[in-house]
Length: 171
Image 1 (spheres, rainbow, N blue to C red):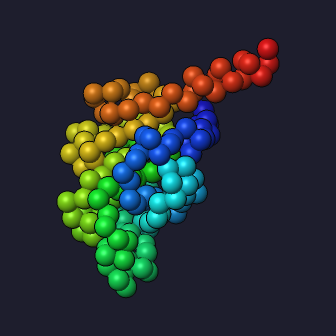
Image 2: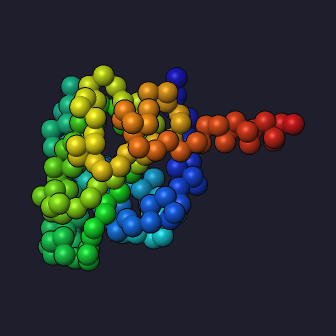
């Protein structure tokens, strides 16, 4: 079935991510979502990565942070970054996020990384958990595979809220 479009930006707040200095989208497709989250948590800078895939197999060939500011001026151009939040729609196998963690570590070594996604699918290939690369993983309650203590630190109740809102709307 088609994934439900959950409004990630409308369910996050500055309280949830108080110390984030930089929001990162793992590819161009995630930019709008990342910008929405960035606005919701207090207008943080958004940086994006560029992903190149093998068209035949779908395999990711490369992932690089795609910012001319970063390329020309280095990480210092972003100020004192101490906490990075990566935002995307789906975590499945986790390969994108492992590559991104390595890329972020090149430019922002030793900086705390968090991960926020709409759908925590956590497919069979997402082992070991992403907590070796990310200090904190958050997702919504759209997938039953997301389990606190196993593969995420926080589950944001969205589906439950949308169901309640729909039932009130049709009452």
